[in-house]
Image (cartoon, helix red, strand yellow):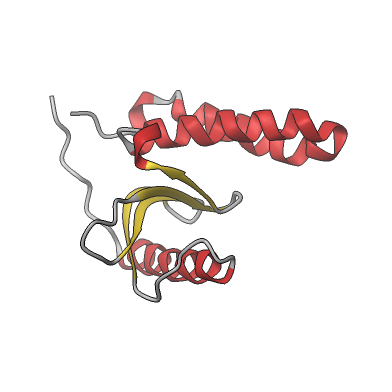
Length: 130
């Protein structure tokens, strides 16, 4: 059974737009994209906290990547690694847990973020189902 997308209030819409703009600028600044034109769109949000979306360089054969931003590290993963925003979040959890373990005690903050995101991934009620 499919749930309808809930209406978005003005504050949430503004926050999503600001996150999209900030994320695009951050990723371009990091040299993650070769082209100037980048398209980004939201796929899932926990308003005022986390945004997961799709991003790609504009061009004839450019596929998308998943991104995550907000109260967490801004990160990217290829579309092949996840079929939905929820699966992308699950991927980021695992990626960050592995990185935190590699860092030892210096990775404690990242481990906490990964664990908090994992709790969200496991919460069925906040994800649209198809």
